[in-house]
Structure formats: structure tokens, C-alpha cells
Image 1 (cartoon, helix red, strand yellow):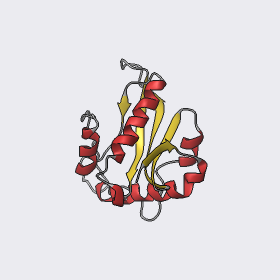
Image 2 (image 1 turned 60 degrees about the vertical axis):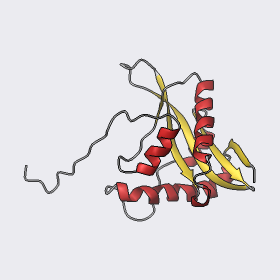
Image 3 (image 1 turned 60 degrees about the horizontal axis):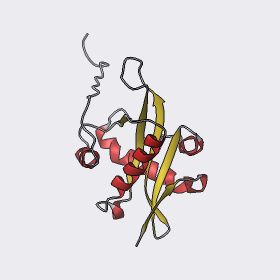
Length: 157
């Protein structure tokens, strides 16, 4: 079946909210600081409505099977660029993985950022999430910085 790539609408929210839970469940093993139970990472409604962000979805046979967003953010004043496109909510339904949908979504997001004269693209990925890292590297991302954490609650300091 043919894949259709399009901008998400508010009508897509029920599916996108399910995708969000899929992202969270996939990332739980990598983040011991997440609260138990149902949580939300994103305000998908706002991402769809905001002029400074765009959510793309891929459809196969009328069913949404992949998603991702880009949000334009003002960057730190000491960097060469003033804005960055921050990517997130990258999700592909298990039954459609390995079909190049992540690349389609990323390319649409890159094109959208370029149309807004934003050329620096960033995203966050857990260091141990090897499949995600490989998928991002396939579309050109390079490892740049590591965010480290430490819980000192039980340390004798």
C-alpha cells in the first residue's frame, strides 16, 4: 500500500495520544526517573496548533502508522545559530518498522525547518537506546553531547 505523509490535525489526537504512550513505554527501560503509571511527555494539541511547530504523520491504508514533530526554539546566544529545530515524538508502529517511515518523517521535518530558515537540528535520545540511535544516524545525525545524571539521595556526602 502507498504511504501518505501529511501534517497532523486535531482529529488525529486519539491516535497520537496512543503513540505518545508507545514512546513512553519504549523509553521507560532507559529512564529510572519516570513516574509510574500513565504520564505525558508532550502537549500534542499545542504542537499541532502552534505556528512554531509542526507534527507530521505517515498513513498506510488510511491508518496513521508513524509520527514526529519539529519545534523551532531560540538557541543559546553564544552559538553560531540563533534558532534550532528540535525534533521529538518520533514513533513508528511496530508493524511498520523497517519500511523507511522514520526517514520520511525526518525528511519532512527537515524540509519544514529549512523553509523557516532553521538549519541546526537537534534531538534527544537515551544513550542505551541503540535502535533509535541507529535510526537517527541513518538520516545523518551525529552524537554530539552526553547528558549525565546522578541521584545523591542515598549518598554519604
